Image (tube, rainbow, N blue to C red; front, side):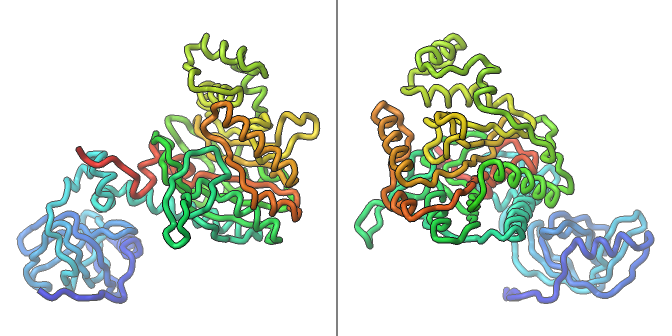
Length: 457
C-alpha cells in the first residue's frame, strides 16, 4: 500500500475546535479545513463513525459519514489526514464534519489503554513516544518546558544578553564540584571530559569583551540519581559584566517571575504539596540559616558532634566544608519552602566568588530554593588572577585532606583572568528543576523526555 508523502495546508486542531465551539448545537458551517493527527478513539453508529483525532494542540471529534468517505478501515493509532467543515453536534460537542479522509501512516501495534492513559511508570520513561501518544499531561509538560526555555531566551535577549555556545568536550573540567564523565579524543590522542558546567568558558568571553553572555545547554555529572538529579541535565548560565550578586539576585527574581507568568499565566505554582509564588522571595544569610538550626560553628569537631547528636552519619565528611554542606543539605534546604535566596557563603565552599567587604572568610554567593529544592547558584565572580590561583591551591588542599569533589584548577583560565575581567555577576539555573516546579511534577524524570535508566534485567 502506497501512502502519501505529505499532507499540506493543514491547520492545528485547536483552531478548528475554537471555530466549532462558536457554532450552535447541530450546526455545520464555515470554510473547509484540513486536519492531520492520530486516531485515538472510535465509536460507530450505523453508517456514522465518530473518531477522536489528536495532534499536539489538542483533540477534536470527527463525524465520518460512510457515504462520503467510503468504508472507514482504520485502527486506533493510525495517522490520518482529513478535510471537512467545522460542526457542533446536537449534544454540543465541537467536531469536524469530514468530507475526505486518507491514511497517512499505519499503526501496527496495539496502543495502551487510551482511556486511562499509560500508567506504568517504567514504560512511560522507556517508551516516551507511547507516553506522549496517550497521556495528554505528558504532552502538556513537554510543551510547557519548551515555552519556559523560549521565555528565558526572550527575557535575556531583551536585556541585551548574547547567546553563545561553549565546548561540551573539554580538556579539563571545572565550574562545579562534581565527578565528570571521561572519554578519549582520538584525533588529539588525549582524554577529554564532558563538561560539568559552562562557567569557565563563559567567563573567558567576559574577559574578551562580550560583557553579557548566556548559554542554555547540557551538562554532565557522573553521579547518582534522585527525584531532583539526573547525570545529564540542562542548565542556563549567564554572566553580566559590571554587576555583582545583588544585581544578579534582582535579575533572577525578575526572570523566574517572568517565565512563570509567560508559561502559566501566573507567578503562582503548586509544587510537592506547597503553593509558592515567584513574585515574592525571602533573602536569608547562610550563617543565620544554620544558626536557626543550631548548626553554625567554625570548629569542625564541634560541628561533627552536633550532627552526630542528630543521628547524621558524617564518616564520609573529611573537612569542615563538607560538614557544612551536609548540614545545609540535611536541615536547612528542606525547610526552604517559599522562594528563598540563601546568601553569603563560607569561602571554603565557593572557590570562584569574591569576598564580602566586611568579612574575607565569607563570599558573595547565593543559592535559591523553592519547595525545599535548589534551583540554582550565583556569585559575584572572582576576577583577580592571583587570588584565583590561591583559591585553586586551597581546593588542592581540600582534595589532599580527602574531599573527593573539588576544583582541579585551570591554568589557562587563570591566564585569561590575568588580562583583566570586569566585575561580574554570574548565575546558573537548572532548567529541569524549574520545569518541575512550573509543571507541578514531583520527579525530574517527568520533565526530561528521555531520562537515563538502567537496562531491564
